[in-house]
Length: 285
Image (cartoon, rainbow, N blue to C red; front, side, top):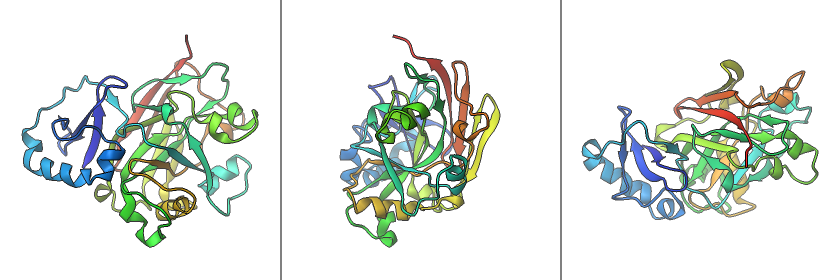
């Protein structure tokens, strides 16, 4: 299944994107795609409903705004420097263990919403990433059982302000968490839709120019390892999002460095997870 949320920011309704591209309303059977939904066997119930009713359900018009397919989770955890080519372009050593940082859940936005350059920013950057959505509470799980705790996968642009991240002291979180810095979607694909996460092409363009052209085959720490590793340090709750890292081609790694400016258009995609598009605008009161 492809889970989708539509409607105005903060007032989204749940839906499904069908194989023929139609989006149908599932609000009669689902309150939202949140921790309660994933933690109460919601995917199974939704699949049963969809098998019997989806073809006859109300179709949502194409002019509806598409929101993040996941309602605000308890946490968003990101893995840094998880592609060796990206680590190299930033001048960092290849990590021996996953580099972990958090991203504020208030950064979540829809896949076609604007990216707002933060107040005082001069180094807003892009990062195409594969994100994992947790389906069941995970604590101290092994790599071999990690897939049992995954609900699905989603396309994520891990937008980053490099000066906030590198030059302002402390952890990376402050460079990762501005409003609109987590465009997610257009949909969450359940794990049966993405049977192999080890060979997914991923790309990103700015104003039509290819910047990132990678593949999840080059992840240093793959999906099962990441889920298992994180579960040793925190409980992963249903609906939590884990973003697994970006390949080479970010603006910080260029010579000279290149960053987003108002008027730019960012487009990105991953095999099986669709594509998204964000216009870049300046911060305004």
